[in-house]
Image (cartoon, rainbow over all chains, first blue to last red):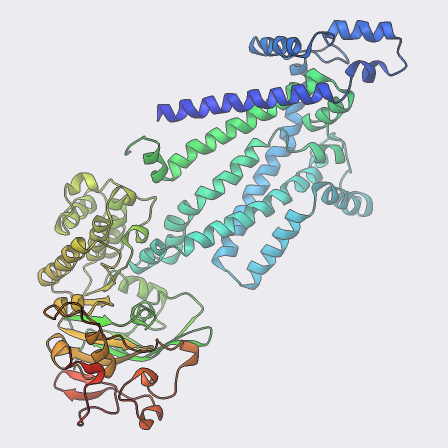
Length: 311
Length: 329
């Protein structure tokens, strides 16, 4: 088990290094922050001074290694716009983003999983078809379309809810719904197919044949097995808690990490972009790691395969 | 049989309008061992899944299944839940996938104890251990904490049997219990079933496509073809005096144990008809060497051939040449 965890941790670290490297290279290939921040009309001396100040005049590999060295010492760089620490800029946005993504996650899990289980248990019934049509629709409609649609109906037409901003909890309702519906649809479809797969397994028939009441068959025998694939999707959603709201935050002018990222990218504010990407990669990798550990809890076959032995 | 434990009569099952069982009549007496044989798709398993209400919802089931005077078809779910495992237990072909992979085997056996004998905690654990011992699981005390994937196929089938015994059923239906197992293990499992039957006095229905297995383990054999029982005969008479041409065909398709080597096995010509395109009258007609025009008039009923033997054939008894050259073998 220890070897398994060590291996996963090594892979996690490698993933983060690769993400950071990729971001570093692409950002530097895609535009000159000096010209963007100082504007193209800036005098050449100013541009040169800016480049020197931020170390942009050094060879790329020197920049790369000094950047990495700084990261290892916990220094994620400063914003080129106002000189503040990038990590502070990002950290102060995280609560706003979580204020959207956490309720949205609850919505996804709270609606998606029960809907999928219900649809599977009532396969081919009218309810099943309704749930699946809604799931396909919720999955197919992009979040910016859904977001604008909700704004049009509930903010513009009905005037019930604000269309953007972050002044009260009412401002969060539309973005949370926008975020939640797509994920609930994905989870419903996934849960349904996982349940159908499991319900067709011989051990479900065995449980019925030994006299287990149907509800207990579903609860005690089907759900624990269907949880294994479902956990993968939920884990992916947990991993996107930080970065999953880029589009929705833009649509609803929500001052979270996502909007910070959009602004930072268009300004080529290198340190901020890299800091956000590092954070996103770390969240993703962490949630994947937790999912991997959960697999072992849920599925004894994997536990044995990992050399954990019995128990 | 005057007062059987289970009497199935006129049992019909259709999936999406396609008939799979076409009026099965079968009775099992208390403590009796009955074999059910036939090719894949003839309805051997469906008969018993239907009897216990274990078929998927789209199956249309009609007829009657009476256990101890109680009708099971259409019985309320709580009644069926008491019968399943408590009166009639069932084990299946593939033991590895018939056990829940995420639960320890002790828990799975214990669940049956809790449901049918109200046992919990230490008592259930002790009884689980005794049952696992009884079915020949070595080191049962430790093995009960194992997961199915940690056991071999044969051991998993023993666990299935222990689980079936847990409810003290009066009938155990074993649906091809050895098909997925190695030949050496097959014999052990069949021995185990015979021993347990002797110890507990429960009745046994052994579903198989293997005539030899069935004849060895059972008192009586029902041969099924295309959704009907076409012959019922004691195991002793099965090999000596099979009456239905299909039964005769099955027997002559067996390799002779004492025969000369390099002898061709007599295969039954043709193939089993599709359930949605059955021939008129006797479903075996098109493949039958005795086939005559009267065979196509109606589905032949089971008629007495000899004491303890019934067959569904219109051309029985008379001076008929043996089908499929049995004599030539």
